[in-house]
Image (cartoon, rainbow, N blue to C red; front, side):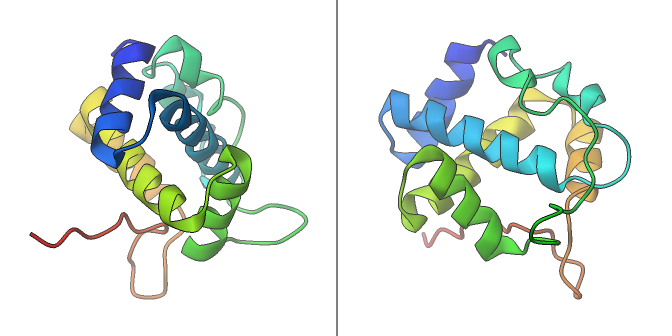
Amino acid sequence: MLFPRFIDAVSRRAGLPHEQAADVARAVLQTMAERVTGRPTDDLAGRLPDDLDGYLSGAGTGTDAASGPAGPAEFLRRVGERAGVDEATARRGTGAVFATLREAVTVAEFREMVARLPTRADGAVQPLPPTYDG
């Protein structure tokens, strides 16, 4: 998937302007790169649009040295801070990025990526995408 198509999909899903969708996508991927556990993120990064794959390169440690493991609220706070958006926009944008990533990679690659994110005690992946009533 090309970068413009990726951002268009995030923009449409989250109801965000194109520039803001790009900022949120970059923020989500940077925050994910800090949080993934296990193997380096380079294997997934190679399957993302060229303008996005750099945000996942390098080894993930699963923790940030300054703050320790991050739960969903901290993940969304960091996304919001990086993208310069409020919490509600960060939540919508994060859900849109995860949904778009699901389309950009294979099922196996997406499952591997999600399996490497921190989980809650009940096994739910952090951060949880927003729920939609409808």
